[in-house]
Image 1 (spheres, rainbow, N blue to C red):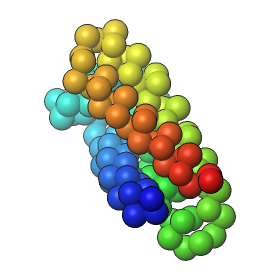
Image 2 (image 1 turned 90 degrees about the vertical axis):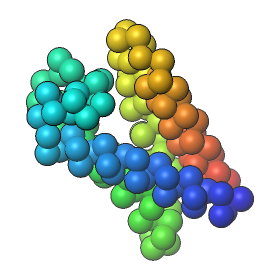
Image 3 (image 1 turned 30 degrees about the horizontal axis):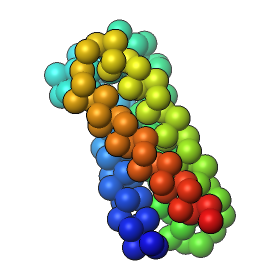
Length: 120
């Protein structure tokens, strides 16, 4: 179980780190061109906030468990990232983007599994 959790943590962390870096450095137009359509119409400050939150969340998935310091932060990070996926899925639903909704749902389930697995 521990091995599966580590694999999922790295997959989710890399996914959110990539997304967060993009949202932290690119404009709304460039993000939409790169396939991150959920940011279209959002204020740049909100896009940057989401990006930085995703970066911190990805770090929170790995570092506390890796360093054996406050491992509860891994659970909290997984829960927070799962919560982010709810409005993201709603945005993609309104935009009629089933592929992105599926991606959000898979990331949501992975985050919930990580939170559960690391809390027991």
